[in-house]
Image (cartoon, rainbow, N blue to C red; front, side, top):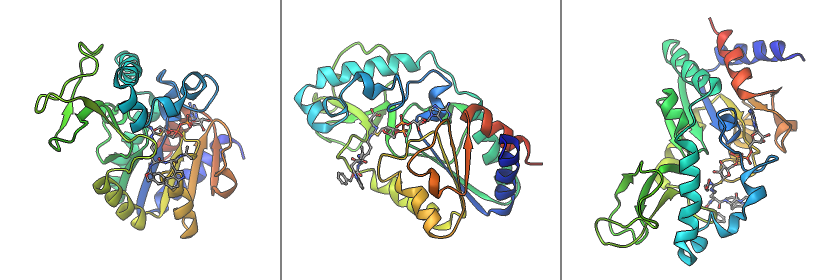
Length: 252
Ligand code: BV8
């Protein structure tokens, strides 16, 4: 089907739904200039994830891991949301003005959905601008916008230990409160969009499978097919910054 026809079908599915959930991955931020992880020129092409995005790696060399996050934070100081982020904000507003529930579940840690104006956001892998004490001396989560960092690794103001990024690393549990809320929304969800994600990281990769197994439609938007694509109700091949606005423009 040509893109406009699948966009029209997607708009019809939104109109028929009562609880729309959107799952996003790094692809949604790609057009803002934020590198993805697994595509060509992806972060994992240049860096070894096991020496960076794990608690063991951090404990082993907090300075090395913080320098990587400081570099990524620096990149983010000059990027802005793209049309795909803003389309999701418009979709959320359209849903609430038409008596439908909406939530945005993002694997992204770049804060761009919030900057674009999305309200009901679950950042299931954390947020790159937030930090917390490595020793968990308190449960406080601090906002730390300093970029580049003056001191690496940054010090906990409460115990003088080390602050770590408030990010979920591989092998770490997701925040139980966040995942509980996401699971509650998925129970009510009758239409899921999965946008700009390779659907390779769990438990997020299980969300589209769960919704399909309950017999509800899942619309996938990606520049290339993924392992999930054969199970998608609709696959819209294209840039999320183009496809999403096209769909939302069709909602009267
Ligand atoms: C956990 C933070 C309990 C770091 C990240 C089964 C169940 C549970 C866990 C597991 C399981 N099997 C394996 C595990 C362990 C592991 C896992 O999933 N491993 C994978 C690699 C197999 N999961 C965990 O450890 C999770 N913890 O479940 O705890 C547990 C623990 C251990 C064992 C069992 C249970 C924690 C996962 C969180 C890890 N942290 N990030 C950091 O970012 O610095 S994950 C990392 O990958 C990012 O957060 C990213 O968001 C995420 C997913 O990647 P994507 O967002 O999809 O990005 P990617 O580059 O891969 O793809 C981009 C896509 O966009 C592509 O498809 C591309 O084509 C497309 N695209 C590009 N441009 C565009 C576009 N599409 C549209 N428009 C465009 N313009």
